Image (tube, rainbow, N blue to C red):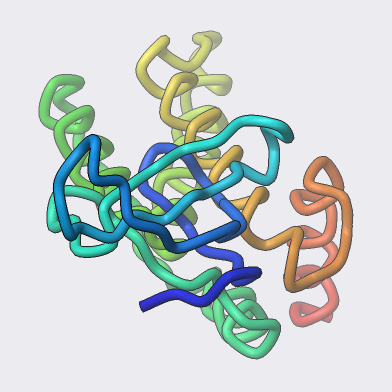
Length: 167
C-alpha cells in the first residue's frame, strides 16, 4: 500500500501524489481508496480503489533506477515492424505497461523511423507521432522528479547523458 505523500505512477493519469487513503462508503462499503493529485494537473483529484487490479499503479523510479535506465538506453531494443497496424499493436502493448523501459523503446523506435523516413523524403506517421508524444509525456514526467529538473528539460538531459557515455 502506498503512503500519503508518496509519488506514484497511476496508469493513464501519470505521476500522482498520494494525498490520502480513505473509505468512500457511497462507492463501496469498507473499500479503501487513494485520493491522488496528478502532478502535472494541479488541483485535480482522482479516487482509485487501493486494491484495483485494472489500473497499473507503482512507485516512481528512484534516482538510482533512473541512472541504470539511462545507462541501458543504447541497448534497449526497438519495435521494428514494417506493418503499420502490427507496429501500432506493439506500441499499445508497450504503453499499457506504464514502464520507463517501454516508453524508451517507443521513443527510440520513432526516432529511428523518423531518421529513416526522412532519408526517403517522408515524415513520420500519425501513429508514430501519437505514441512518441505519449511516451515522452509519461517518461519525462516521471524522470523529472528523481532528476529534480523540469519535465521539458528531460529529453536534453537524456541526450547529454548518453553523449557523455559515448565520449
